[in-house]
Length: 391
Image (cartoon, rainbow, N blue to C red; front, side, top):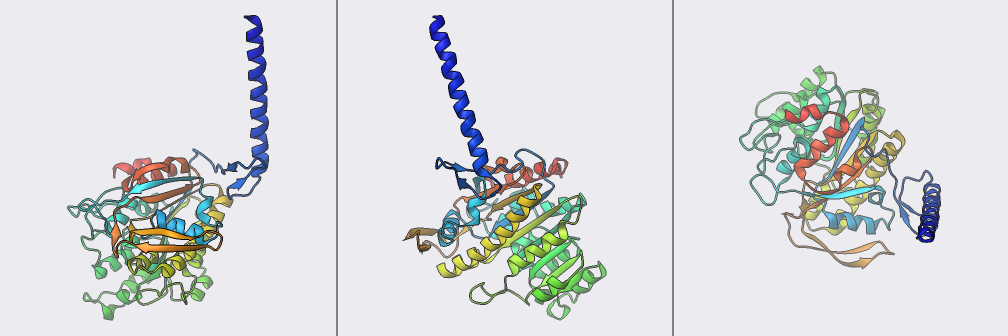
């Protein structure tokens, strides 16, 4: 009996030593490269950025209409060099609205940033139209810096869900005045037309309101980059951008850089929402080339964000979608050539789950199958703003 016990102890000691050596070797192989990489044994390794600790900043990224098929199409098109592969944690989000199996961007965006379900076409209100606060308004109240960068009008559903409180997402006169008064530090996108008093039914001038509140307003990429103001609004176009291919400026990547430059100055931290808006438009059109170009633009922005988060060490990054668009199916392709064969089931939104990717402090809490209203409580918890959950 004693011989058997002695042999067992030796085996356990030897096994523990080998496992320890392998673990040390894995740590050596990881190095400082943030991208998941293979060890000498061929095992894939994941970075573990600040697991379980409090975040100082949060960057919430929404790919409008971006389902799992769209993400995989981007991974293939990037020839396996996709920035989506840098995320150590992933999960899913269920996107149904309060009154529909398939959500629109108004209810979808509102659910993500407020943690509450609402009816399609509502923005920042409950089904009974009671106003509800958003992630950015909570952060603003906590004296963090706040902002958003989008490739659509600043009055469109997703950006407007962070500051507006209206029963219909098309109430642009009201929405634009609410934006001018929201107090966020950086707001970048299109939609200047609705801010000009001559184009409004109410005759008000939200541009004057912004100027009185201390904002610098810029109207081009060059003006934006030259600005030294810590309160910045940029309108790149009167209404809506054209597609990134063949001619739109890299406003998403450059706008993100500018926003991070300004918001990161605040020692209390920041909350930034970024939207790749036209992935949705491309899929409504069932246009695969348009979609892949917008996803490539999205990838460029992701690199900037993840490089920032890696260097900072205190930034939570969450990437998701408000819904999937097009019912995209990838029926074939060529991995080595980065080509996808795409087919669309619909020209509208679908009700399928969408992906959630996370990086940074508390990133592991976003794994699994979430409801879209689960994301805000997790973000507030990561920021140490749990007290806002009951508001």
